[in-house]
Image (cartoon, rainbow, N blue to C red; front, side):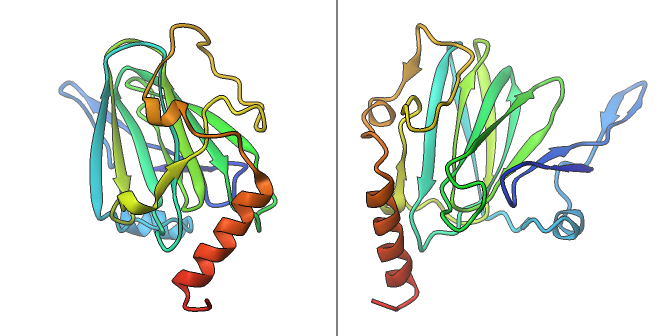
Length: 195
């Protein structure tokens, strides 16, 4: 596997090294030793699949509050997606910056999204299937997000009309930096017993 560090600390594009023959190809998609050698966790405890029927579907931008430490490895199994990461870790130099990558059934790349980074994607074609592998169990009580088109972040999505999005994702309020940082401090203190 080839690992390409992204501008957001702890995030990486993971490229399979495919070995082709007359049958097709073989490639490793996860190797604990290789992930660890690149500073990435590979202890995935939950996997999920998202299928999107229509081009222009947006999912996200989702993250989990502490004490969750959910990192994700995301791969597009069918179709093509514009995959987006938004750094919500105030201690990182890349705080509030975003990075997008193309994941599709042809390049077969995956992206590792560290804990504290919001994630979402937009489908570029109809009939997309995306595999998520998580380093922590999804905790609905800690799950939240930021709005996909919040002007605070200046995110440019490739498809701007006929968007399909869940009501919950469309209803996230405008990002309030001070309010977010205060809530994050409070939840971090609670999860470490410093209340």
